[in-house]
Length: 376
Image (cartoon, rainbow, N blue to C red; front, side, top):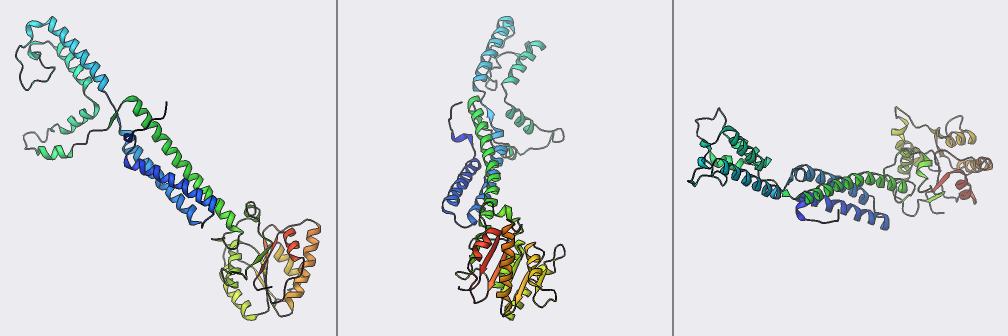
């Protein structure tokens, strides 16, 4: 069936659905080419749902109610009824009324009183075939009920409440309208599914980008790193999005273990307060080790951090550099066996002294990420 379009195929809501899903495609183009903020992909999903809603309403209230145009069939039936009438006229000519009244219909030139039951049934059946379904329903609704017999009727109210005549189309146009309606519904359904996938892809793509990540959730690192691997070094000092203690809470929300190196007791206390909602979690409380613990050796801290059993806060003026050196030796042994952390582990360096040379490459080989909180 060649493509052909007529304005009667869709209602205004149908055209609104088409405009909505075309807008979705335009927003996706902007999303993948210019990579704007996440709001673009989210708005496109809302538009996809709106397009489906408009398409569904258009299908149920307009396209499904289009009636076939019976003009040609009616012409054939009129020819048939004329032939039947002529046959009756030839056979029962003496019983034909020669007088026509103004109230008579075009096919009521026969004197019904002079016809037998068989002839009357023939004429009535032919008339019934000529009457469309919507007109039969209209007559049924307009007919007085038994309860209302003898009562006065408001004719104008009945006419106002009568349903409008349906849209009619020829068979070929009706097939096209149904076909386009079907594809409009299918397109909007697919756009909703693809819109969800676009948002998931965008979320995972930004998950490991410091300047773009949003809504931190616990996601396995192998899944988050499929699209954008986590960088081995993050320079937070350039344009920090959050305070340091808020960064630690962000990492905890992601489910990533961290070691926070600081020489400031105030910063350590502030970090501990920011992590209290996670340490008191009922289902899976976050374990936080601090330097004042009796069993707080470098190896003990490293093993808990490496296997994501706990995070560590190092609050000391001398301890950060010595502990970091111990971590480097332990990471070297892990690298020699090609071991990597299952969940991205972070070394948050909030100390004035620079990190040792080669630590960034070592972190990249073991799946560790270093966050620098100060200028180096």
